[in-house]
Amino acid sequence: MATNHLLEIKNHGQSIWMDNLTRDIIKSGELKNLVENQGICGITSNPAIFEKAIYGNAIYDADIEAGVRAGLPTYKIYESLVFEDIRNACDILRPVYDATDGLDGYVSIEVPPTIAHDTEATIKEARRYYEEIGKDNVMIKIPGTEAGLPAVETVISEGINVNVTLLFSVQSYVNCFWAYIRGLEKRSANGNPINKISSVASFFLSRIDSNIDGKIDATLKKGVPDIAVDAKLRAVKGKVAIANAKIAYQEYKKIIQDERWQALAAKGANVQRLLWASTSTKDPSYSDVMYVDQLIGPETVNTLPPATIEACSDHCDVASRVESNVDEAYNLIESLKDPDINIDINAVMDELLTDGIDKFVKPFESLMNSLEDKIKLLSPV
Image (cartoon, rainbow, N blue to C red; front, side, top):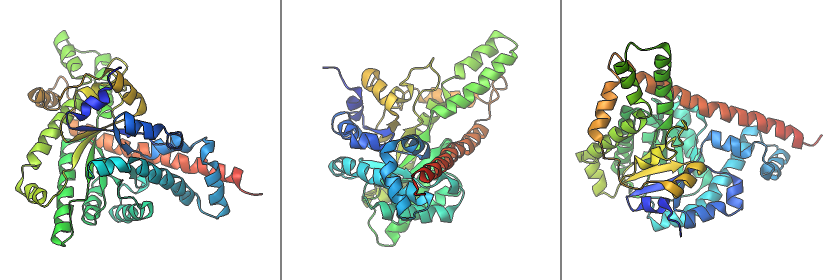
């Protein structure tokens, strides 16, 4: 019998979640099989995933029609569809949640991306989503924007599980972990238990390499003065995202040694795990499992789209590597300052965060428009 490498990864302390959710995989039993037999122990979703799931899919028509008959506005019809899928997925993952004492078994749903820069609106929607979905193992996704992090702190203090998404820079990740710590401290100071709250920090990968590789290719296309500069530039391609992630993991290790975290851990707090996101390889010349193989390590999560799950199950090279070649990772990021390379990593991260929000807003708005069209079709004349 062929080895399922996803199951081997668990032995290194990393959990594999799936970055996909549709009603089809719930109804067909595919999700249940992935959970029970393939090592999948969590689900992440986002507006782009739901747009693909709902658009043009007749499986949702009866519920859309019911929403029309009930006189619900488009946004409420959208929520009724998505919340049902999230609840059903939570039920399928509940045995994992129970078996791991709340470490895994979560299903993530994102607050509307249109409010990414509005702290109060984010807090309000996170509370409402958590209450209306009504499942212990739901995680509310909040973007790690300047406005998002105070919302993370507040909702953590209220006992809501949070997946902080769209993290690109190491500093944004550090800020995110401290927002989690402040939320737990506030909750503990109010006399509430902190041992049943969970959080992950979704640190994005492939989008970083796509952005930086594009800049390098543009420089190479213009022409470089000599072969040494050419070699410097090519040495960076496809390497920055993994180096950046390895440095973030070193920051994680520093924070969990801090006395403030240690005090919370003594009260039973769960660590906020780094979750590797955006893990499908965009450049076909790179390994299709490079963002899995190079970042396996303890107390981490990797969320994979279906194609990467299949590829990893087949040919991942499983070993704990998140702490290998760490010095090289620091050197690689430092090398971006070399005048011959001249890439401002902070500017890249800011650009990616702006683009990342846009990549969720556009499908969200597109889905609302397509739902409007379908509502018109299904509405009585």
